[in-house]
Amino acid sequence: MSSVAHRNGNHKVGPRPQGSALKASSFKSRLPPSPSPSPAAVRRSSPASLCGPVKDPDGVPGRVRVAVRLRPRNAEEMVADADFADCVELLPEVKRLKLRKNNWDADTYEFDEVLTEYASQKRVYEVVAKPVVESVLDGYNGTVMAYGQTGTGKTFTLGRLGDEDTAHRGIMVRAMEDILADVDLGSDSVTVSYLQLYMEAIQDLLDPANDNISIVEDPKTGDVSLPGATLVDIRDQQSFLELLRLGEAHRIAANTKLNTESSRSHAILMVHVRRSIAGEDNLSNENGNTSHLVKPSRPLVRKSKLVVVDLAGSERIHKSGLY
Ligand SMILES: Nc1ncnc2c1ncn2[C@@H]1O[C@H](COP(=O)(O)OP(=O)(O)O)[C@@H](O)[C@H]1O
Ligand SMILES: [Mg+2]
Image (cartoon, rainbow, N blue to C red; front, side, top):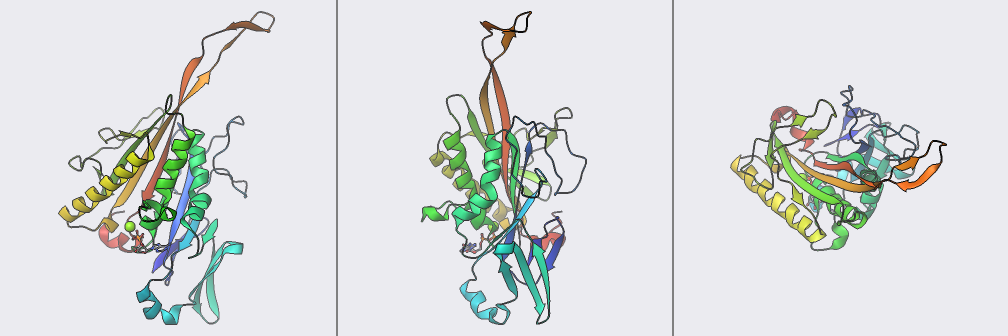
């Protein structure tokens, strides 16, 4: 069983697609906190000079986009689910998923993207995450979340390192490749935190002893920070892969200690991008003509954040008390 998310954020439980839903959004950094409690809240400021965040065919800028991905059936499901093989029908051309209740009745859901079992990791990244990564590089904050039952492919989609086959690289690895390719490490910086949220407590996956990290929100800017979380400066892809490996090992160890499964905690990767933007103040003379005198350029720093969340398995939401 897996939950799928409706286009407008309504959730409906359906009978057995092995799919997970991916949500992606971005908004300009340093916006005041939105009063809307809905995860589908639209948050964007749109100065014309800035490239907007995720482009949206509906003309609703910056709204949360939802994609569904169906993974291939495994050998066990091939046998056990043979009678239900046509229960879930994907209609990628019209971006719909149909859940057949019986021969004459079906529910249809519309998504921003429908990714079939044949969709490659590359395509999933390009359709779901790349627009968010591009917004982050433009100074917006962006989030990609994977939601679905345990075993539906959330970690495969987000966290695969692609050690054995680079085609298998997931969203985290591909996002960092694009970020590192775009920034200038001479003047910009990329720092990463990797955290786990379990029963309201935040644990540092890069320093597991640090297991009670607080969340602080700046009342003026709305900036959320996690003082005490390890921040690692990333300068190359290899060190990022090491960091993901270390985080995953700590996640397994921490969950063994807590006697929980990793599927009951949320894993949160935060990538902070700080870019130096040269600012120039031209001095105007009394006639309004620009003087040949140019003030030395003021270095401006633009901060943005990419958050990638591998959510806890949706099947135990009520029992686990995670929400
Ligand atoms: N798109 C896919 N193609 C092939 N195998 C997949 C795909 N998605 C998931 N899998 C496999 O399904 C299993 C469960 O995936 P996983 O990502 O661990 O699920 P989750 O994180 O949602 O619990 C894993 O063995 C994974 O390799
Ligand atoms: Mg997982």
